[in-house]
Amino acid sequence: MASRTWEETKSASKSPHHESSSKHAEAGVDRPMATIRDDDERLLARIGYKQELRREFTRWSTVSYAISILGVLGSVPATFGSPIMAGGPATAVWCWFIGSFMAMCIASSVAELVSAYPTAGGMYFVTKHVVPPEHVAIWAWIVGWCNFLGQTAGVSSVAYTVSQMMLAAASMNSTFEDGSYSFSPNALQTVLLAVALLCVMGVICSLTTKALHKIVLWFAPINILASISICIALLVLTPEKQSAKWVFTNVTDGSGWGSRGFSFLLGFLSVAWTMTDYDGTTHMSEETRDAAIRGPLAIRLAVVVSGVIGWMLTITFCFCMSDFDGILASPTGLPAAQIFLNAGGRTGGTVMWFWVILIQFFTGCSAMLADTRMTYAFARDNALPFSRFWSNVNAYTHTPVNAVWLVVLTSAALLCIGIGSTQSVVAIFNITAPALDLSYIAVIIAHLVYEHRVKFIEGPYTLGKWGKPVNIVAISWVSFISVVLFFPTIKPVTAANMSVIEFLECILRVKA
Image (cartoon, rainbow, N blue to C red; front, side):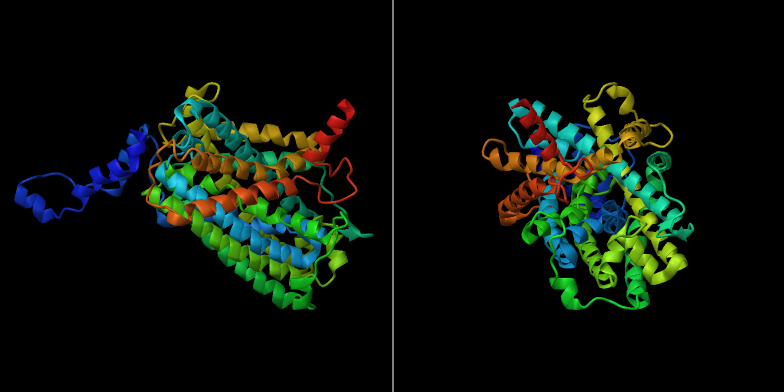
C-alpha cells in the first residue's frame, strides 16, 4: 500500500479540491473542500502513521529552517582556520566553491527520495521503500542508528562551538599582556557552558510548533542580513587588504604532507562540516504544510543560499588577512575572531562576533529540532529502549518533549568526554559530517542497486533523467572526500591530531 502513497493520496484529495463550489451546489452536495492539510494527513495515513503533531510550518518558515540548520555565518568563522592553515587562501576559497556544487548533488539526491515519503523519520524511513523486504530490518536499523547518533553528535558539536565562541569573546575583552589574554578558558568551563546551552536549546525545542514557526521564521533573514553587513564592515574597516591574486591563486602546503594537492583536499573540511544534515528539514515534515513539495524545495534553496553566503564570507575573510601569520597564531584560537578584532577593534570586533555566536546558536536549535523529531520517529517504530515513553507527544505542546530531553541528555553525556580529553571530543565532532553524509549515500546506493527489484513511486519533486548521474556524483564525492577528511590536517601525526585511520593502523601494527 505504501508504494502507491503519493499517487493514491493526491488523486483522492485533489479531485474534490479542484471542483468548483458551483458544481457542488448544482449536485446538491454539502461537503468541505479538500485542503493541503487533508493531503498531508492522508499521505501520512497511507504511509502508515497517524497525524500527532501540528502542521504549523509554512513555506517561509520551512525555508528559513533549512537555511538556519546549515548556519553559514556561525559555521564558516568556526571552521575557517582549517583550510587556511592546510592550504592557504586559495584553498579556502575554491574548496568552498567546489564543495557547494557537490553539496547540491547530495542535497538533490536526498530531496528526491524524501519527497516521496515525507515523514519525521527522514532517510531512515525511506530505507524501507528502496530495499527488498528481507533486507529492510537490517538496513533501517543501521541507517536509523547512524542518523540518530550522527545528529546527536552534531548537536553536541554545535553547542561546544557556541561555548568556545562565547568564551573566546570573554577572552577578547580581558586584559592583553605579554602576547596573551588574562582570561583563558579551560576544558571544564567550555563543557559546562555547552551543557547549559543544550538545556536552553531543549527548552526552545519543547515549545509548541506554532511558537517554533514564529521563532524559526526569523533565523534566515537575520543570518543573511548579518552576513552581508559583516562582510561590508570588514572590507571597509580593514586598513590593508590582500590582493586578488593572493586570495584566488595562493595555495600552500601548510599541512606538512609534502603536497600542495593533498593540502588543498584537506581544505574541504570547512564546507563538509557546514554543508550537511540535508535531511534535517525532512524531519520537520509532519509539522510542515504540503511537506512533500516544500521540504525538497527548501533543502535545495538552502544549499544555494548557504553556498553563496559561505563563499562571500570566505573571500572576505581572505582579503582581510593582512597579517597572515599573525592571524593564524591568534591568541583567541580562532583566525576569524582575530580578523574581526583587527578590523573593528575590541568593541567593533565583539559586536560582529556577537552575531556569529547568535547564528551558531540558531543552528544548534535547528539541529536539535531535527534530531528530536528523528528520535520521535525512531521511537515510534519501537527502535529505541523504552520507545513508548520517548515517542510520547505532550498533550499541552503537541510536540515530542520526551524525545527532546533524551537528545539533551545524550548530547550532554557526549560533551562530558571533553572534560577529560579535548582532542577526543573534537575528533568525534570532526567525523560527524562525513558519517552523516555516508548514511545518506547508503540509502542512495540501495535505491540504485535495488531499483529493478523494488518499485519506487516518485514524489512531486524528481530529478527525472538527471537522477542517476546526480546520484552517482553524490556517491563518488562522499566516498572520496570522507577518506580524505579522516586524515589529520597536520603532519607529523601526534596524539593531538591523530585521526581514526591512524588509530586503527596503530592497533593493527600492534596486533601484527
